[in-house]
Length: 360
Image 1 (cartoon, rainbow, N blue to C red):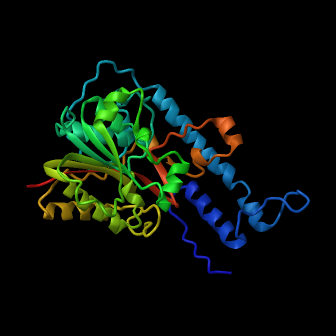
Image 2 (image 1 turned 60 degrees about the vertical axis):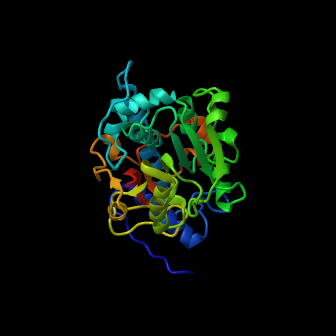
Image 3 (image 1 turned 30 degrees about the vertical axis):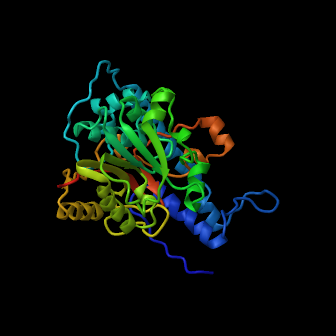
């Protein structure tokens, strides 16, 4: 049997559950059964200590989900909001942000309900950054990386902004997993959102190109802005993600804007995930990339690492997530799983946004 290395995570029951699940897998090679060959409950020491871990984890999850839903229901109805300037920083997603007028405005623009979910924050963050830099207007050109089936290309097209949306080639091995969960743009049609723009206007302003973010083609140049939403953590390593942020600046005209969101390991400054399909960036990596960009003459928004202090900022969701629930779970609880913080391979993570303006 291979060596088992256990490091008890600090903090939550959720992380303890993850550690115990890994222990079961390491010892038994698969999930340990709670019953014997005659379907009677087991009473060995390991089973007695672990049999209720999954139920305890579900308790944590669904109390968190219910809290998020109740808090969303108490948010005021805000009619007549307009786009405003808030001085957006490089920052993590927080409950305070999602409850704010600026996020509410962009949700209304995208015609999506305002709920406490970090993916919604990412969409609003990108739009807010582009608005604050005066680029959400007719005639602008934008480049989206790893767009999948985001609503942003359709929304930009509705404002007569020309968009080149990109995603992995359909035959790339990494794209298969995204396609299985409905997150890959194999065709231009995947980017069309009928509730946001007329088809003719979409087709007039949006193009699709399959691009490896680790090898950005040299002819993608002189865009007014570029963006990516939780894509650069999937490039294979932390260094490749940082290199992408640097290289993406080359696609912009002088004064052009880059805005990216990615995963932020916000509780552990010592250990993180690297050299893996999903890597987790730490505070040190955002400080590093800001310095690298500034050394090359680019402007970077102020770094703010405050992850928030409200109830949902302290709820760290854990697997299994809605897309992998079994049929019984789907029928019983539906598919909505609202969260701002989430456990990724046992590390507490949230979204972090980076804003940079090209120098020169």
